[in-house]
Image (cartoon, rainbow, N blue to C red):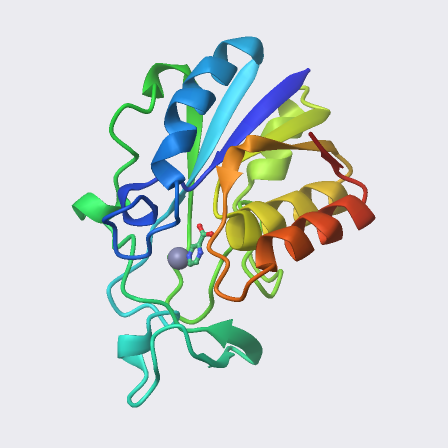
Amino acid sequence: MKSLILIDIQNDFLPGGALAVPGGDLIVPVVNALMPKFNLVVATQDWHPVDHGSFAVNHPGAAVYGQGELDGLPQTFWPVHCVQNTGGALFAPGLEMRQIARVFPKGMNPGIDSYSGFFDNGHRTSTGMAEWLREAGVTELSVAGLATDYCVKFTVLDALREGFEVRVLLEACRGVNLQAGDCARALDEMRAAGAVVE
Ligand code: VGL
Ligand code: ZN
């Protein structure tokens, strides 16, 4: 049983959005064409409260895209993005929603960030996605979405730890590249952990 996981294909990660990923909009038609090839499609949705601790604005003096700490973990401080019930948190216009069986929101706890669709960054709380996929009989996961160097990467690493066979669909992913080479390094990490990048 093969499942496609769509990571955070939301307005704030598209060009013009609060945390724009270059070319993020270009994956929408690619993903739409991929969906019919899978038995099951699920999506993650970055879904932050306005007081979320990953937002630079919630740390006096912190710079947007600067580095700090949150819940004892290294944290990049982001612009305000994907706030619950705002337009920026909505899925991309044109994304074919009818094939998406279930949406897993993440990032609701203001005290910790959640890049992966499976767990928060400290592996303290599960979204239930691994159990849900296993109960549906899924063994093979293909991952697409935004951003390659954050939420795609951490979802892939957790999926491997959870025992799934994982493919990363390169044409259907785009990254932030805060530092030149971040996406290439993220893909190397995913490969080293056992993912197939194709
Ligand atoms: C993401 C930064 C902050 C992502 C989410 O979807 O990759 N990146 N929140
Ligand atoms: Zn976020």
